[in-house]
Image (cartoon, rainbow, N blue to C red; front, top):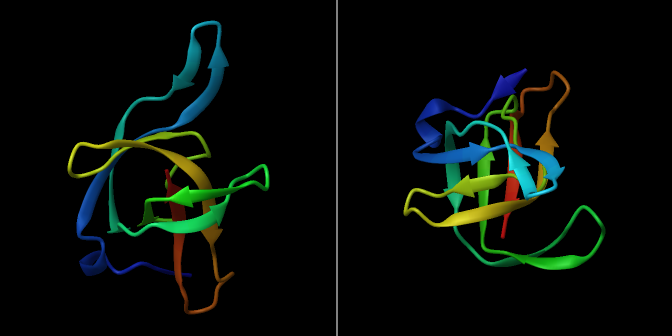
Length: 105
């Protein structure tokens, strides 16, 4: 299995994994700093429920990153955003750059 090369992961984001809802609103896990490649461009994507929505950024993270949909992410400029979808890009042993693609609101 191959992974994203370290020299490509030039950015650091902070991820608070979504744990579910409580009586007081969404619950999040502990904040974790993650190295990634951050592509800040607007594009149309599909949310987990199938609806089309606009993504303002995409983060390419190590495959083992814990960031389910609805997780809270803080970008390098301090802006907070939410994971629309977390897509595993695993080549199954092929020489591909395995990673987790986070589409962010």
